[in-house]
Image (tube, rainbow, N blue to C red; front, side, top):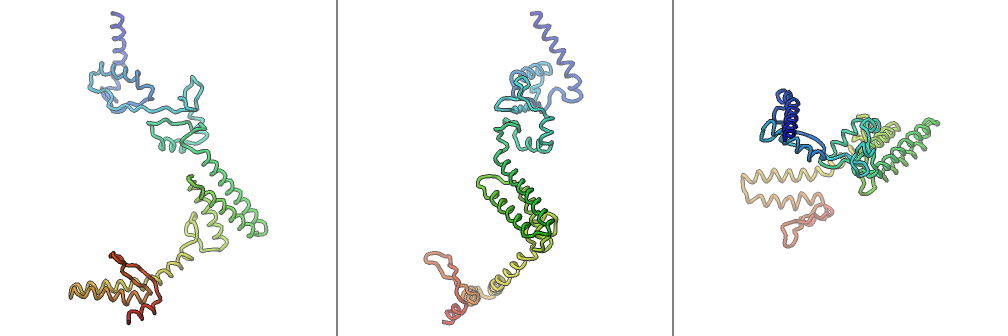
Length: 300
C-alpha cells in the first residue's frame, strides 16, 4: 500500500513539475484543443485526462480532443516496426510542398489518408494521370514538329497538319465520358494554338498572352452586328407598345386592349410574326409567315 502511495506521489510531483510553468505561461489548468492520433484516444488520453483533472481539479481539463486518423500504406497503418514508412523528405522531393499541402486540404482529418505512393490511392486516379501524361506528351511532340516544320523553309502545310492532329487528340481527350479533364493542360494547348494562328494572320492580335480563340473583333463582332439588325425592329415595336400603354393608362384604360390588338395585327405582321390562341389555354402559339401574307390578312 505504501508503494502505491509513493508511486502516486511521484506521479503527482512529475505532473506538477511538468505543468506548473505551462499552466501559468501558456496553457493554464485548462486548454481548448488537444490533438493526437486515434490510437492515443484510449487508454493514453483517458489516463492523461484523469491524472490532470486529479491534480488541477478542473471540471474539464481539455475542452476538445481532435484525434486524427492514420496515414496508411497498403491498407495498414504506417509504422517503423512493420517497415511500412515513407519519410516526409522523400515525399517532398517527389511531389514538392505545394502538392502535399493541397492533398491535406482536400482530405478530411477524420478519414484515412492513403499514401500517395499507394497503388490503391483513392485520392488520385492512375488512369486519369496516364491520360494527362499521354496528351501532354502529344502536345510536346506537336510543338517540336511544328517548330521543325517552320524552320524547314517555313513549311506551313506540315505545321497546320500537326496543329490539326493535336486538336483531334485534344478533342478525343475531352470527349471521354465520366472522366475529369486537366483544365490547365487544355488551356495551355488552346493558348499555344491561338498564338500560332495569330502569327499566321488568321485573326486579329490577341489582347493578352494567354488569350484563347478568335477575338471578338472578327466573327463575333460581325455576328453581334447582324443580330442587332434582326432584333432591333422587334424591340422598337414593343417599345412603341410600352409607350402607348403608359400613355393610355393615364387617359383611358379601355384603349389598352386596342393597343395590344394593334401590335398583334400590325407591328408583328410587318415582321412576319403571327400569334394564334391555343384552344383551352391562355397561351399563344408563335408562327412565322411572309409579311405580305399577314398584311393582306389584316386588311381583310
